[in-house]
Image (cartoon, rainbow over all chains, first blue to last red):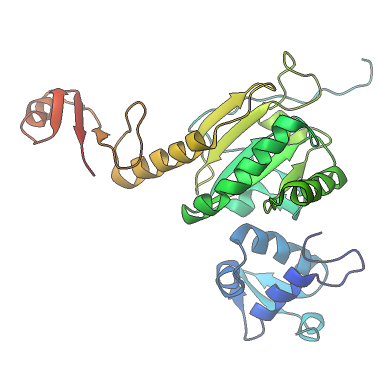
Amino acid sequence: MACVNPDGKPSESGVKMLGALKSGRASADDIAAASGMPLFRVRSGLRELAEAGYVAGSDGSYSLTEQGRALV
Amino acid sequence: MEGQMEQAVSMPKLGEKAPDFEAPTTFGVLKLSDFKGSWVIMFSHPADFTPVCTTEFMAFAQIQPELKKRGVELLGLSVDSITSHIAWARNIQEKTGVKINFPIIADLNKEVSAKFGMVHPGQSKTETVRAVFIIDPNQVIRLILYYPLSTGRNMDEILRVVDALQIADANKVATPANWRPGDKVIVPPPQTQEMAEERMKAGFECVDWYFCKKKL
């Protein structure tokens, strides 16, 4: 996976995305703008981070879970 | 052979929504719908670690900055594995200095290739031909190229047609043969008799009522 390593820990790009959520809920577009990553990478990365329990998403916006907050 | 299921092969057409898929790539698992909002050039190559394909990958990487300026992402595909793709990209960078910085789909089960008609048995029963799909931000297929195994693609043409499609969309015009950015564009022909009468007085450069150009 691109944003979550096989051991379940976020990769460098995953941590970058989590960092973009530090100040609160954001959409994939906001995270792409803040992180400088292409939107397609952010969308797929958020899916992986959500599966791994680091972010939670609803209605097109995302926020850090407690697990995600512990890393940023 | 008995017990072997055949993949349904489709040949997508211009103007149709590109079939969505989810596939393993060198940038993680991606869906085509992840690219919604951007233009994307999805292209296939026959095999990793082969010479023509290597020149093409280097050439795509070299036009990537120009594509990014135009809001276009690249997405490669072959039926090789992720491990092969990673090894090949690293080999290209080591031997030539060219970094491959776009995702490459590992289409081992040919699921994506079948959706996009990328395997042409007359060329190869196992490898994809050199296909190019230019897909717009609404995920509509706007241009298709199929090149044979023997012939590497031309990046000037790929950039040229991206410009042509984007200019056409932005200005509701068409582009003539051999058009290059900065050249005059074609004004769409009138669709009624009344408009045909008005066309000749509209100040365009006209050969006849149906054939007019203008400068943008």
